[in-house]
Each structure stands twice: as structure tokens, then as C-alpha cells.
Length: 328
Image (cartoon, rainbow, N blue to C red):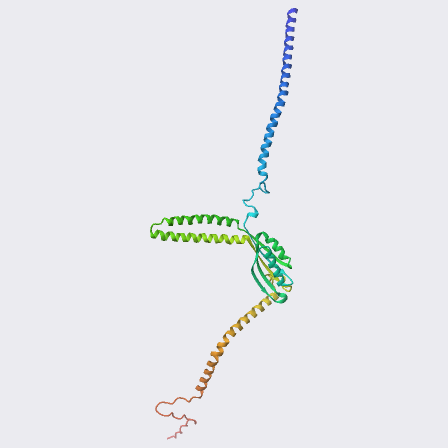
């Protein structure tokens, strides 16, 4: 029993030792494999990461040159400098000498590449006034406005803008379509074989050409307004009122307005009287003299005679009194 038990115990110990050695060997091989595979996997990962970085950089580079502020929020189709905008400005400037200021304003506009569209002046010493309509290139609009404001003391400035980009795009599309319709009508007209077809096609072609000319004129008008802005400048003397006449209220304003209306009415009345007076002298005086002569002749002429003899004299004395009757 002791010998058999010892043998079984030795076999068990030997088996346990073998299992332990095998376990240790497995752990070492796993660790080695992991250690060997880690350096190999790292370059692969680095390569993949580098490729991803290169792809990200390549995707970012094309957009980097085109990126604009607000692109993430939906950039407009056209930039501001590509839009069609009409600028219109009105100014009122009080100056010491209206004529000198008007010459300076015209020189400023001419130097900017513009021209004078209208010039109205009223000379009344210190209450002189000049109304100038100036056309300047749109790109120099704001600069010219600032230069005009330096001519004196600016009392009022109003600048308005109108975006007509959509109208221009719509006109371009309509003009293209209308030109195609005109060409189609011309081709049909060239193929016409009867008089009736020829007349109807000529009328249709004339109508389409008229529509095309109208569209082109509208586009040219908008192009003129967008390329050349309009500035209306009022240059007033030192005694001019600083407030706008349209916004003034009160008794004195009404009195001045009424006096102006009265003077205007009297001027019109005297003008009409001066125009009618020669006719009155030529026609009215002889007619008046003729009427006076006719009235006098009627007063001095004798009454007409009765037919059948001379007229019996009219009694001048009192009527006769009847005699009294006596009694029976």
C-alpha cells in the first residue's frame, strides 16, 4: 500500500509540474507574440493615421482658399461688389458764397468722372440758392458725398439704396428668351409660301422685335442708374433758414405762406389786366361813347304824331265842375 501510494503521489506531482511548466511556457509565448506584434502594428497605425491626416489636409486645402465669412450660414450667390445697386442722395449745405460753392461742387464731380445733370440757381444776395443734380460713378459715390459736405455747414443728408440685382437677372433671362423668339419668327418668315402667312408672320415678328427693344431699353436704364449714381445738392446762402420749409408750422409760417399766395394772385391779376387793357381801350371806349350818344338822342327826340291829323292838345287846366241842379 505504501509503495503504490507513493507511486501515485509521484505521478500526480509530476503531472502537476508538467501542467505548471506548460502554463508558464504559454504565458511567455503570448507575451512574446504581443511584444513582437506591437512594433509591427504601430507603423501600420501610423501609416493609416498619416494617410487620414493627408486626406483631411487635402480636403481642407481646396476649401481654404475659397472660405469666406458666413459661408457656414449659407453664403449668397453674389458678393456685394457684384450686385446691382442704385445709390441716390440728397443734401443741403449752407455756404458763404453759393456761386463759388457750386463751381467747387462741379469741379469735384468732374474730377471723379461724373457730370452735371441739372443746374438751377437763384441769386438774391445772402439768400441765394443753387440746386445741382450731379451724376457720379457708383464706386465714388460716398467719397463725392463727403467732399460736398465739406463745402460748408451740412444741414441735411439723405442717402437711399435700391438693390436691382434680381431685376437685372430677370431682364437678362427675358431678353435671351425674346431673342430666341425673334430668330424663330425670322426663320418661319423665310419659309413662308403664301401672302397671308407672310403678313401674319411679319406682324408677329414686328411685335416680338418691339418687345425685345423694350426689354433692352429697361436693362440699359437700370444699367445707367447702377453705374452712375445721382446726388441732388441744395446750396443755400447764410441767411437761408436752417429748418426745412416742409416741416415748419406755426402762425408766422402760415402768414408767410398766405402773403406769398396773395402776391402771386395779385401778379396773376395784374398780368391778366395788362393783357386785356389794350382791348378795352380799342373796343370798350368807342362802344361806351356810342351808347351815351344813343341815350341822349332818345331823351331829346319829340314823341311820335298820331295818325289822321295833328295830335290834340292835352288839357292843362282842372277838369270842369258839373252845375248844381235845382229842385222842383
